[in-house]
Image (cartoon, rainbow, N blue to C red; front, top):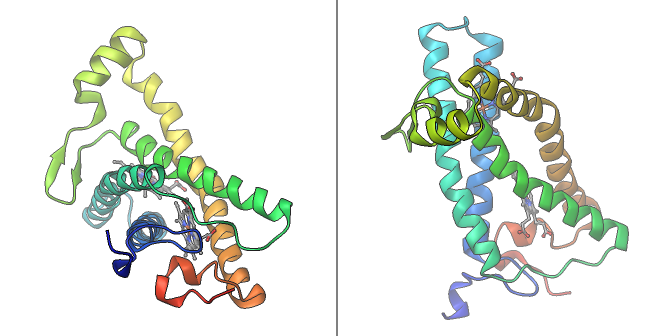
Length: 203
Ligand code: HEM
Ligand code: HEM
């Protein structure tokens, strides 16, 4: 593939595919935080309006898993750009944060789906049955593990709601703050190379 298209990552920068997948997943996460708190803070619980908001949240949440799968595939089939100059501690923290965010990208939407009592829609079009109605739940969770829906749903709910509210929000805010710090204080390529290959400055 010609590098003129800059699709793949290189030693000094991300390619367009990684950039596209990063921002679509980031936008979905930010949208889902905004949607769920708009619902909780400003709408009457279980009203028509609140249910519609929750259906956007679940549809965006299950759909993002498709992009997460593509992102993981792309990550494993492509090199990661080298670290920009920094201390060993900074590099360690950046790598730990990126690994944590990859876990978050899988665990948060998945726990949302597994713990939800209603159906959801992939890309707002394809109906996905609630997990309790699937053969996987009946065979594996109910059959092999011997768990009722209530016993299974409770920990999924804790992971999704408490994890989302108190852990994931802090991780994402710290990650975004680090990107802004690099851009405005360090003035290096960290944010530029996640926006466009054309913005990367030579060292
Ligand atoms: C990008 C993915 C997702 C993010 C960032 C996200 C985030 C959150 C957050 C922050 C909360 C509120 C926690 C609180 O109570 O303070 C929440 C609640 C909830 N989420 Fe998600 N979620 C995602 C995906 C999903 C998916 C895939 C489903 C189901 C298919 C789902 C279903 C729910 C439900 C039912 C609630 C409870 C709403 C209520 O309290 O009435 N979420 N989510
Ligand atoms: C406004 C919000 C965000 C900003 C400004 C931002 C910025 C960035 C930047 C600049 C990088 C490149 C780091 C480097 O070159 O070493 C990056 C990488 C990364 N971001 Fe974000 N990000 C945001 C939201 C998110 C969200 C919501 C997630 C996941 C839920 C996420 C997950 C990741 C991951 C996993 C990497 C590492 C990519 C890799 O090398 O494989 N980011 N982000």
